[in-house]
Amino acid sequence: MIEFTQSEFMVEIEVPEDELIISRTDLHGKIIYANETFCQISGYTQEELLGKPHSIVRHPDMPSAAFEDLWNTINKAGKQWKGIVKNLRKDGGFYWVEALVSGVYRSGKLVEYKSLRTPITYETKLKYQRLYDKMRDENGERVRKVIYT
Ligand SMILES: Cc1cc2nc3c(=O)[nH]c(=O)nc-3n(C[C@H](O)[C@H](O)[C@H](O)COP(=O)(O)O)c2cc1C
Image 1 (cartoon, rainbow, N blue to C red):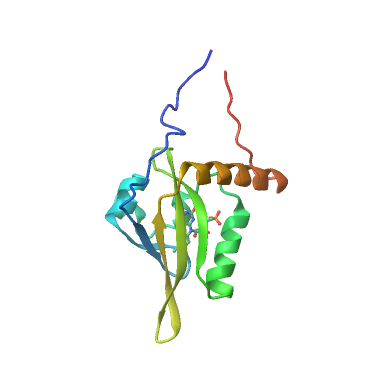
Image 2 (cartoon, helix red, strand yellow; image 1 turned 90 degrees about the horizontal axis):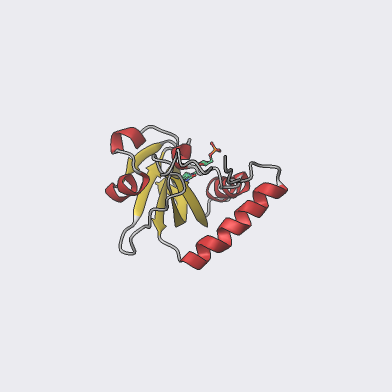
């Protein structure tokens, strides 16, 4: 028998072509700004997002190596990180984006981080789902399984 107790899980939300998902964090990765599109796509209200770590939208399919690379790039190297990210919605659904993450500097001093996200194609999603599955598998991280009971 197949049970759909969590039928909303695995439902994808498409990011509209003409929308930008924008957020800013403090230097510890806590959300200090989230635009309306970010709220709508992630399913959280602004109040729920502000002050929370950005990992609130981390999807378990994301390999930790991707975020190590992100933090090394924006923090240690002081450069912009560009990457493909699968994010988790509040209701258990997900959405894929291409993210541009970088530091915000005032008078040459790093004060916060910002991120802009745009939609990606179906082919790119497929490619990265496979790549991230492989990376998690090779690193002994959790691997997605579909279980029928
Ligand atoms: C500006 C900015 C935006 C970020 N956006 C995301 C995001 O959309 N999704 C995500 O999973 N992590 C994002 N991160 C990375 C998180 O801070 C965190 O490193 C990641 O979710 C892994 O969480 P963990 O190390 O607690 O497991 C962002 C970080 C910064 C600085």
